[in-house]
Image 1: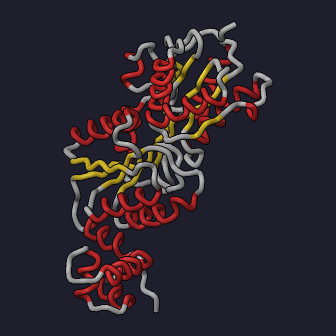
Image 2: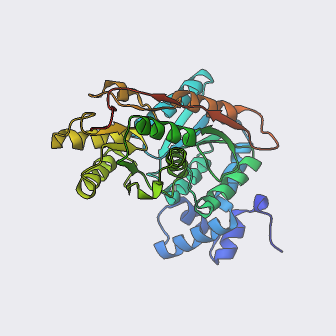
Image 3: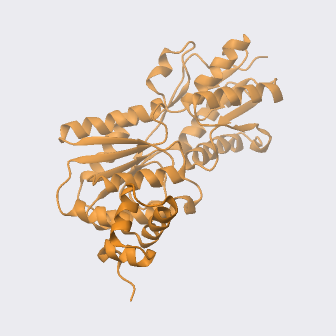
Length: 343
């Protein structure tokens, strides 16, 4: 008879793996005395049975936790820094400790961080940043978080995910449409896009908005160079180098986050290319430093601190029958990095 996941014991894992309870315990706690081959086999059996997440969730349900976990893609990205400040602000007000984890936009690492937070018996988990376009990349995380919620844990996400949780949803598509329309209104037609991986829902949504603006202007987006690189400042530099090498006649670079835009500006400055005289540059997010750049960055403003606050407040509420949704609006902020297209 197959046991329900909520009634699993260490003994069940040990029996399924064909080892003693002591060996199973040492394997799962990663202590010495067990070969790596045996330990990995035991951990694999435990994952398949759902033991690790479930046993810690039962411990969580047995007593109130005063800590919450925040999972971000890039701890050095100002976007996530501002979201974290919102979570920390609410956490401090509510007397909660916040643990922050970093995934590097790797779905396997995200799953590992989720399991670590559950193992640490946090009372709530906030997953901040983009989900993945392919639902299968978050299928196991969805399953683990569902068990965690059934055992009393709370979950909220920021961005479009496939995790079936309360969500704060930035209007990325509207933002992409607005910033592209701004460049088109300035007369730019030789536009290149610097973007993170299209496997991220944030990128997919922002690109969809850009494409809508081109379609509304009667222009083909298929002819627009779209360069994928890491969604970071270094990725922006990489994308800029590639754009300038393959498309030296561009008059505008539309970067899909501010970190990439800063990297683009850096390359243009090093090349002696005037911004916006020769090339206009836009970003997305409006991180705090955007206004202090030279030139100040035209971008799409998202209320990132408020998004972090809202996500934790949602997670602290009593669970609802269906996931709750809160939309975070966006605003185009025009600064000095954009100007009319050169004649």
